[in-house]
Length: 441
Image 1 (tube, rainbow, N blue to C red):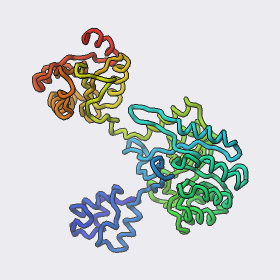
Image 2 (image 1 turned 135 degrees about the horizontal axis):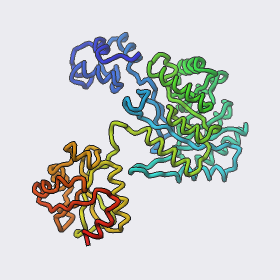
Image 3 (image 1 turned 120 degrees about the horizontal axis):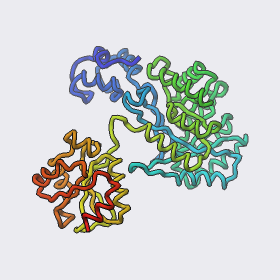
Image 4 (image 1 turned 180 degrees about the vertical axis):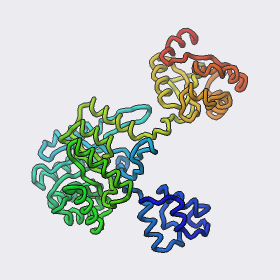
């Protein structure tokens, strides 16, 4: 079970020596309890205390990285069962599956789909994560050929290699092992061979078992053989996956079975889109699925983004002075807040008018206009600071600013405080076109 900060504090030397980098032992204990520090940072801990703290303060779900370079992704390192308790940190990787029985042209077509997939939503690019190659032919030569087709020109694309025969997997790793692919195929009968391959290439390993008890035992065997980067194979029907993944997450958070404290792998090739959505919602960390229609792919990526954003932090834009079109010194300056949804909604309506303008984004901690005004996060001083910080006066001739209609109660104070003329714009961004036509002729 995880120890609380005060329980951890009792095990510390209480020297307040600061050698761990924290001002007091209590601060260090709080970081240990949150998983933000390692016991080894304390030079005065005895071995018994280190062992106790090491077991209780490590993340309940180990962190695993797939691939190398800018497209590599990390999963695991989660701390809660319900998203609203805190947040989910590492979104699942979604990889399109190809079979080594398919033609090279078809494999290249799937690679192109993965490469070309991008959904931009509230300023964030949503992408697929890689390719999973399945050794269905039973031929090492064909498996190697399929991998070579994928890797050629795409060494940065994260891979999952799926083969149950160690000899076939080894042939595939000889081609791409340096790129740290996730390898799947380890089960009751071939644990030692797959562990040997995982250690040789430093690749993370997907481990399976006939049931959860057997799965945990296999993971323990892998740990004993020196493998640390592992994932749990819970592939099955949607109902089976929900049951087992829920039980595994609960067990991992309770730290009651160390062998289940790893990210979850889901092969959704047979369950398709519904299996993919189930995996996103219920704790899968890597999901392999056959190529989807564009509509399905967009829905899955948006679902993943919704689940893996912090519910306690509104998605925010970086405050600043933005250009819409190619504004000049005589074009208008619109002001709004840094709540992303507000920004992108307004930006879309402004772009549709084809009128170039400036857009001044002020920091309201991600609140919408109405909420920010009510909470005092949008005020005359905030506007004045933003105008000065982003040197708005250096970009325009007329010191005039257009504020949202919901901020109209602030108009007088903003004029008085900033010296700028204030025009009150519409409350609804959908009315911006008529506002520009009538007020900014």
